[in-house]
Length: 191
Image (cartoon, rainbow, N blue to C red; front, side, top):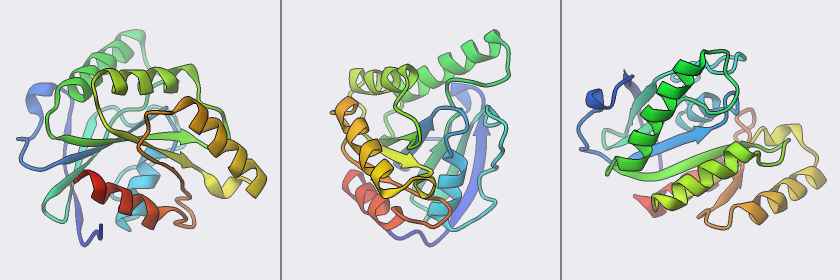
């Protein structure tokens, strides 16, 4: 896949506001602060396309980005830590379960895991949720540039042991772009 253009389309806080299912959607999911927005910016070559923050939980809406005029990248709120009320977390949970569980246009879910840490229970729960809903998914191990080669190998093996339903596992660095071409090639298989 080659990305020639990318633009923010809209943010959605309610399932009734989702755009028509006219294009396939690649959804980016993961814990709060795992690097979803940085990955989107790196993949598209547009530094400020998706807003980034060092504060967990900044993405609070489902954000749609149109690529090549025929594909949506969708950035969803992170799960796990975020400095918000339980009521807001519950609302996010219902929104995301309804979206990921029912949206026919979803071609692939890209689950981001921080390569510096083993998959947490919430990550494994997300993998189970995706498998239950027969959602194809792949895993991106983010922040690859912060690891030694030995740590990279260990992180990938540990992820393989708990993510047997993943269609792919890619180590990625938003800083250097390592893994970008490999990941874009994987996307082609699902579109």
